[in-house]
Image (tube, rainbow, N blue to C red; front, side):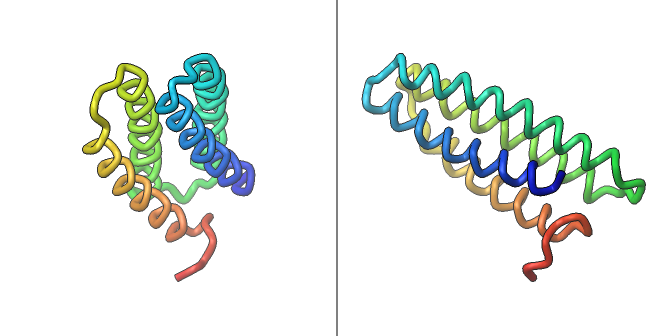
Length: 118
């Protein structure tokens, strides 16, 4: 299940950049399609993350923090696309998104279920 969770995150990030670039280029129809597919991946990410959270009885604050950071990351992804669609500035959201994404990934790799890279 960990691999499915990570794969869905990677696909979601790719879809985020594709949707953002389509909104930037003015292709509203293509952007809307990729945005809706991205929303499906939000559900997959949340379900696989919840399954990983429930599967392991070794719950502590790090798991709850990771889950909270993951939900905040998804929220920032959605806010980025909506603000781009409405043609509002997204500079501050990009900074917040990158910071929260890095924290989420680092915490996920640090947890016992994650991969030991460091």
